[in-house]
Image (cartoon, rainbow, N blue to C red; front, side, top):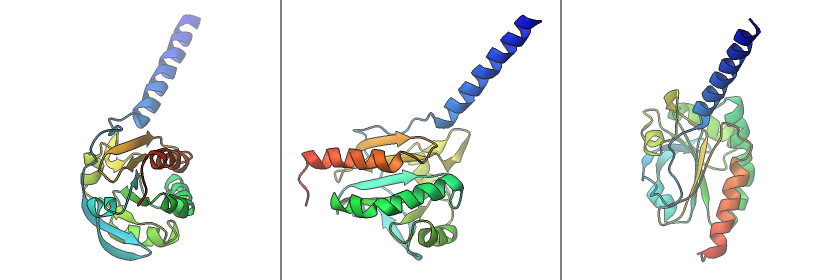
Length: 187
């Protein structure tokens, strides 16, 4: 009987471990990969416009982050942290954009309240951008996983970080951007 309980406990622990891994593991783009170009509706400070990655890259590096859903706890924390860091990103010539499967009406509100009108958020209701970046949640592919990229002006991914926790996305992308800027002439 004790052996069965121990085996059951081990099996349960293994299943829990595999389930947790499947939530964070993904086939995201890696440094050196070309970042897929995209154009979509975005909102900045409550104003909707057409965002094109290629246009943003002409101005400098882009910090592109994916998040599961506007107004959820982790995504709100992450939006606040990116908003607080926007001026620091600008010192390195970089811009920030967040992408989720939310519709543009939701993101127009989110851009003002949670992004504090500091950076745009883009709507991807059909998950085309999410899929192009392999940034979907493994168990719910239409929703974005929490994935952050730093993309150089030449369109190459220079950094990728995936974690459902919002805690390190700003710090990690900022560090990657600083390292890149140290070896590249700024405009």
